[in-house]
Amino acid sequence: MHKINNLYRLYIYIYSPSGISIYSTVNCYQTIMVNNLRKFGIAGLVIAVLLMLMVFSTGCVNNTGAKTPTTQATTVFTAAQTQESTPAATQATTTVAITPQAAAGSKIIKVSGSTTVLPIAQNAADAFMTANPGTNIQVSGGGSGVGVQQIGDKLVDIGMSSRDLTKDEITKYKEFVVSPVALDGIAVIVNPNNNPVNSLSIAQIRDIYSGKVTNWKDVGGKDMAIVVIGRDSASGTRTFFTDTVMNKTNYVKTQFEKNSNGAIQQSVAQTPGAIGYVGLGYIDPTVKALKISVNGTLVEPSVKTVLDKTYPISRSLLMITNGQPNGLVKSYIDYILSPEGQKLVVKEGFVPLP
Image (cartoon, rainbow, N blue to C red; front, side, top):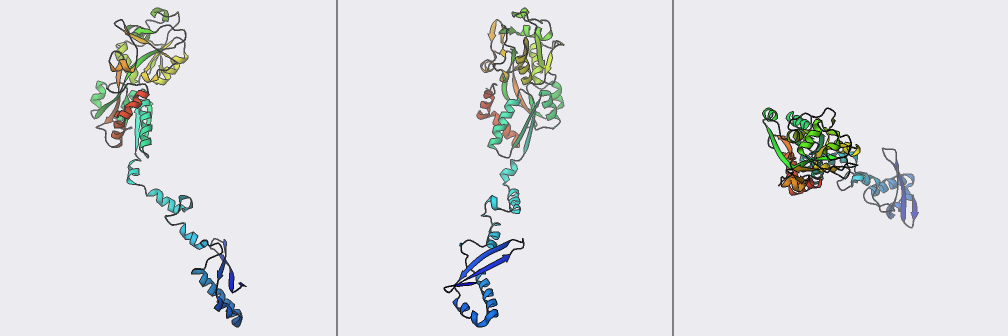
């Protein structure tokens, strides 16, 4: 302690429980106490120190004017503190105290099935989750057969299908509710390299897929072997193609079977002489979509021709639920059916509902 013109500066070292020493200085004008200090010697010094400590704890300030470390240690537990300075226990309490809206939005929706419907479902899920934080919509493919089976077994909340339910499925799953979400045309595509064929009739397509026609020269093309690529047995697109084009005729045994629209599109693009079929949303510059000859009129696969029903290979795209959809499932399907959701349908190359 030093005297500076009746100002006594007390240097105090306090050792905290954590072992960290806290250093502070205290300036106090205590003239009466100091004047008596010399009279009482060491006892007076002790009394003076005690008095200084009392003053220190009741309002004297340090040189910088900042709060003392003890006060700081208390304030970090207050609600006014930022997240960076909040102790872990306080952070944990804040995390648990979620709002009812956030709790309701933490539900998970599982969707599976048709790879044709998949891009619609996925893009709608992304937009829906962005608009509804906390919602988790998990979309996977596998084919329409997988979607019907999994919704029937209640493994998912929504099954996607690019074909109508069969009579057996309707009988087995009486609680199914089918919601059309879009329309689609099945485009017949070929490898664009060195293939001048631009159109085929339904009968010619059937002959190719049954193995009756094996060379492009037999349908107006070059002398080149036809590589037939189709879907696997779980595919709703294959089922619809079988009913609409093949008329129950068996497929050629040399057909390469793929498990998705994307796989067919890629295989046709990479294989000279190849032919395949995909949903409208999978047409791109790497393949050539053929026009279909209908009573001598060539009809291009497009949104317009599907809507006006002049394109002969078109269908509805479906979402299936166990009973009437409700809660978050209903909100998600309603979003797809909304004007904003139907814009996503068009963006993916499919046909909006009329």
